[in-house]
Length: 546
Image 1 (cartoon, one colour):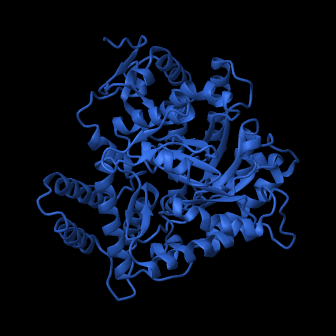
Image 2 (tube, helix red, strand yellow; image 1 turned 45 degrees about the vertical axis):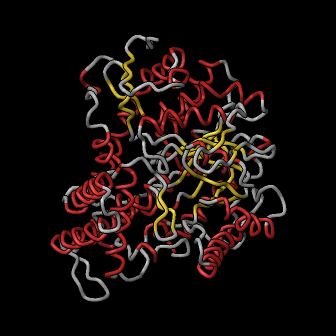
């Protein structure tokens, strides 16, 4: 059967059975409409990021915007949360493969964030099959039997509430072109999910809920607000049907929390402390400031002053505005066949969640179903109601610019250098092979944690930092270490030529990222170039009339 696309829409990805249902003429028309209406604004905002970075590189400071002081000073609230998002004490996150979707919905968590972004490598099959899986889950038609294990999977009656995270504004979807130009990955993921699921969600008395990643300013929040309003109008939905939680995972965004909530106040439910991307953003945006060099990745915890200030500012602003203040992800995961190590991991999770609930967070994230009861027990003991929206720290002082920007003390070590290289190579290799969430040494690594690893290596080389053991971090040292560690990883997979090739590709990508004088915005951009190298090249915005 021939697949007829709307005028101006070209599908470059292959069409497996079931894909045509997702990429229907009507669905593609809806998504293409989003593109045509909002693409120029998206590109303008991405240029604004670059302009803002250039200002920071020239010595400008991140500050609370003076032109929006009235928004920060005035009294207003966001729209109240829907009933099924009032209690979000534990949320689980993960990729959108079929088994993960069922296991996460059955995990006992209040919500499941199905992630098309950092936990999903954007292979065409991952994206379209992810849409199929979420559609089937919302219709409760996702039952299946695993062919290898024979285990049967189906969704329980008390399943978690589904929240979807589309990709960030910076990412394209090159498998679908509109007027010769690649779609926004954000609008592709958001548009297809909303189009195919809003009716089933309404029938189940829930709604289309989203997590919005990587926002850097109120202007980017305003774009999402416009997208939501347009989408609701196009689909005949009541205003405020779409609800969103914004991940505060960039250092510029933390200076515009009130403004972000204000722009989205008809749709927003809360803010989330996306800690790993936040650390990466701190390094990236402040990369030309020698006062902002961070120690080993493992030393940058939520208890260091600038991270604690960020967490407390999110809580204070959210609760003033009637929004949920969600805590972040502890990367620890269960350790198989080692109960002592397993209990140590659980205890670290307990301590992390105890800090969050004590500070006033309304909920938290975990990366594995076995950790849901661990986090839940901590929140249950402290949070007797559905949330802590009425929490106010009467002794808290206002969070200052200095508190948000001051780098913590700590060592850079030889082991820290080696770990960053090792994790980055392993993660990028897995990403190129189609996996976005990768367990490495009993931690769940995703794109955000790999970004920290490569950003630190770049920063340490730029400033010729010296490790605690006395070695100066130079380009030559990093080149030698990348080669040594790459060869060591390859010895773990003898005879697996395809995997060895991906390890080599990953090491090459990492070398370029950490040795170039220019800092690449995201490691997923050159990696995406690699996995889409055989596709027709999309035109740039200036090459056609919108």
